[in-house]
Image 1 (cartoon, rainbow, N blue to C red):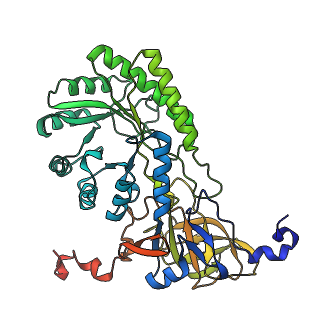
Image 2 (image 1 turned 180 degrees about the vertical axis):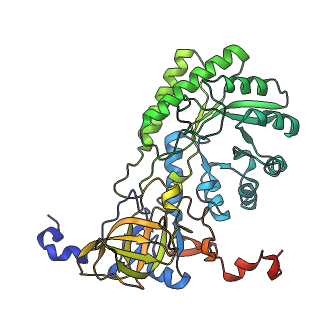
Image 3 (image 1 turned 90 degrees about the horizontal axis):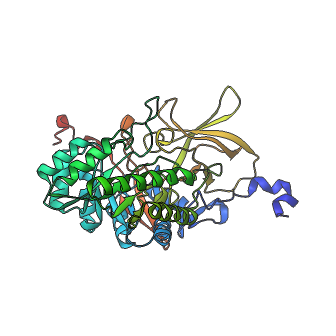
Amino acid sequence: MTLAEIIPSLRASLPPSLNGDVWPAGARWAPHGDLVVAGVGLTDLATAHGTPTYVVDEADVRLRCRQYLAAFGAGRIAYTAKALFSIGVARWIAEEGLGLYVGSAGELHVARAAGFPMDRVVLYGSAKTPEDLDAAYAAGVGTIVVESLSEVTRLAATAPHGQQVLLRVLAGPEPADGSDHRFGPRICTGEAETAVARIAAQRGLRLAGFDCSVGHQVSRFSVYEREVRRLVEFCAAMHSRHGVDVTRLNLGGGHAVAYSGADLGFALDAFASRIRAVLHLELGRHQLAEPALTVSPGRAIVSRAGLTLYRIMSVIRGQDGRRVVAVDGGMTDCPTAALCGGAHTAALIGRASRADLEPATVVGRHNDVDDVIVPTLQLPADVHPGDLLAVAGTGAYHHCRASNYHLVGRPALLSVADGQARTLVRRESLTDLLCRDADHGGA
């Protein structure tokens, strides 16, 4: 039995347990209710840098990179930059030996500033602009993902001779309700084969293989297994009809992450073993040579490593008696409902409390019905303005998709490692808000 079970009155004064699937690997409780990540106390961090502030555990990001490499092998993992990106993050990814999926000239610009090897970069995107393609050509990007028939014509006319491409295909049937808005030619309609034939006919393009996007927050291996079977069958058909030999198959990302204890995680090692076995079996059935099997996770690498610090601004009770806790951020910096696929959890930090726990809802500062950060959270009854909250699982999407709704300014992004904090991206200031305003002299 635990001490809390023996003496129930102690339960309220003990900090909540830290779920290792949700909180950074370097997170632990310190005396007086402070939360420490990678040896850095978050209370002092909030005092020094203000709130809201994004914090990312560098060692956790590197650990996830190594776990993916151990599961799939060197050269088989590419990080998708849209999850979390800065020069510092790009350098971590490069140093760990991963490739990189970028979706714009802007992400490519950051990658180049970080010195990321361009032969390990893949440009993808359903609506690449001429600026995106020109930037990729100038940088010498290793691979470009073709996501529509019209792109074949564009690339044939503009890409450097010998440009390597992947064709993104949709392997499953089209939903009857038209709810699937992913880009890529479908196998079942014959459009994917048309794209293969067009690429094969272009002497300046080299078709290396196929790329796919399976979904978001996927925890069931069967989804990927079906994709592999359909892809291998398609590879066999393209080899027979067009003489195309595929050397790469990318299964994308979409691997489930845990935002709270209620979420299913993703058994990475078991997945890698299972999907390789399925691929080997299907290739044998069709008598095909084995291509390099790759994945391109983003969120699954950085989500757990990140958390966001907030200061509580007000506490009220709703009509149902539940407390509503408002913090100094919100939907501008934590776009949970729209993007994350799960509800975050959080913890009160910086002080101990012996008050009983009560359910609460944590909301943002924007007076919007959708501005909910944590729908349900157990907090001490004495929670009050000035208290600090740490929201877990915010490593992915939050920094890259933060907005200036209400002109509040985007938070700083800090990394913590070996007892030290470092600013990766500084906080947006009031001066920054006016620097592009032409009536204020901005350019």
